[in-house]
Amino acid sequence: MKDRIVVSAVCVFDDAGRLLTVRKRGTGMFMHPGGKPEPGETAVQAAARELAEEVGIVVRPQDLELMGVWIADAANEAATDIEATVFIAPGTWQATPAAEIAEIRWLDISRPDAALSRDLAPLLTDHILPLLAARAL
Image 1 (cartoon, helix red, strand yellow):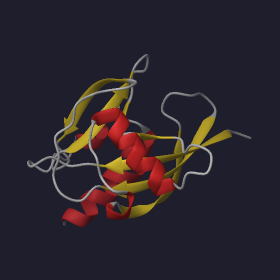
Image 2 (spheres, rainbow, N blue to C red):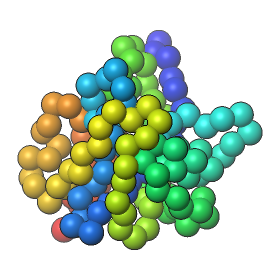
Image 3 (cartoon, helix red, strand yellow):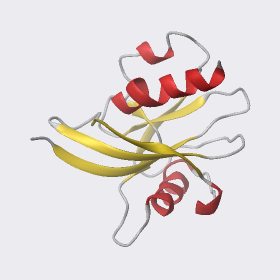
Image 4 (spheres, rainbow, N blue to C red):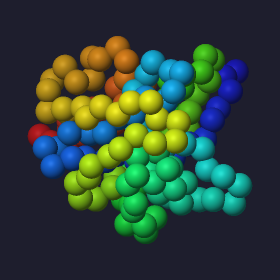
């Protein structure tokens, strides 16, 4: 049986409609900004806190929109699943890497091959990008 990590993640878009992805220090995979809730913290509170800590985007928890909850292979930990509650930050944003974020990359989700990048987390390629593509149709 696989280990499971509970996380919150946020879809953030820029004014060109690109999706923000981040790469944490010491890892090779790009993913949503986000992370594990602290004790007593709800999923949406964790999402808002992590967004501010990792990329300097301040959004009130009540303004985040729930996309859904998914189980996916963890991007950077073997034999581990993540249970990810994913939100959308309404509006358009600029981001600056902070905390443990080594690099940010804006992903053009309008490209049909966006999900084929080998350095994207499974949550993105298996769940979020297909959902966003379906919404765009």
